[in-house]
Length: 48
Image (cartoon, rainbow, N blue to C red; front, side, top):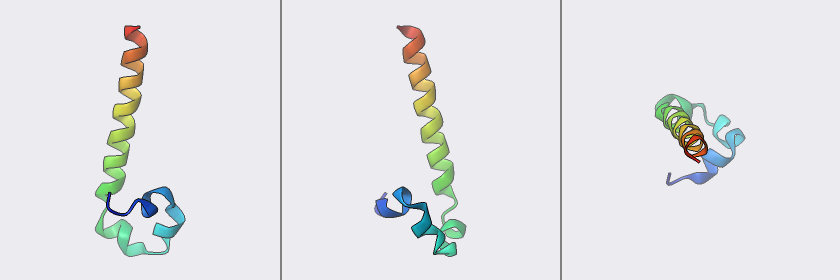
């Protein structure tokens, strides 16, 4: 979270292969956040 440039620009992170290997949890956290957002959206839509 301290480096938003890497998250917004995937090409910049691709230039450094060490980032993906040393911090693979970033993709996991991203998937979890996206999944939670989609689930929350569906729940709120069904609730209404």
